[in-house]
Image (tube, rainbow, N blue to C red; front, side):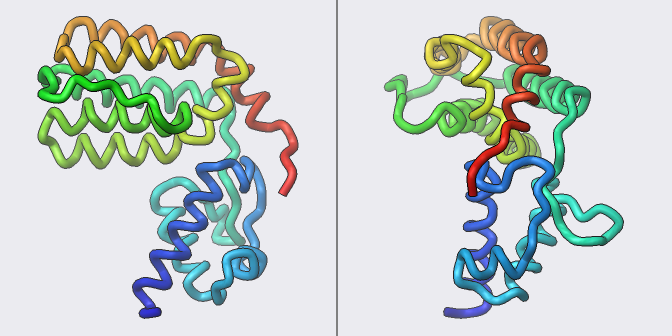
Amino acid sequence: MSPGATFERVYGAIKRMLRDGELPPDTPIEPAVIGREIAASITPVRDALHRLTGERLVEAPNHNGFRVPLLSEAALRDLYQWNGRVLGLAARKVQPASDTHLQHSGSIEEITATLFLRVAQATESAELVASVRSLNDRLAIVRRAEVASLPAIADELTGLESIIAAGDRIALTAALTRYHRRRIATVAATVAHLMRPTRR
């Protein structure tokens, strides 16, 4: 396998571990341990961790090792608000979809990520698409935790999907506002769920 292909495999594996919660918030990341788990040498693991640090999925406090960021209530509230602002910008340019068939396969976080990316792609702005992709990655583990404190998320996403497909900008803006306010109101419960011990 070429060095580039090895890096992409390692990067993808660690990113999946972060998104799936296999590396919980505030967990130190030992490159050697990760390397053994995914059958990779330490160099591509470190390179991948540096890239993930740049993407804010990993942090390297004082350049003293790597760890999974710990989301405080204030930080999560800020992240929700920023996600809402970015999507609010994108919603202004949403258009009716040519294919209105609703897709419901996948996990809550995967469906949410797909919906929000669809909104961003309607703007034809590469910067907005990149921003939403990044926010989707950072919020993936949070969206898994939301299920514990927010009822009827599937119904909420179905409603959002219908509005997006219709291209109704006013309704979409209002729905996105409700979506984020609902989550900001339960930030404490979501953070508490994120901090529950998990088995590795």
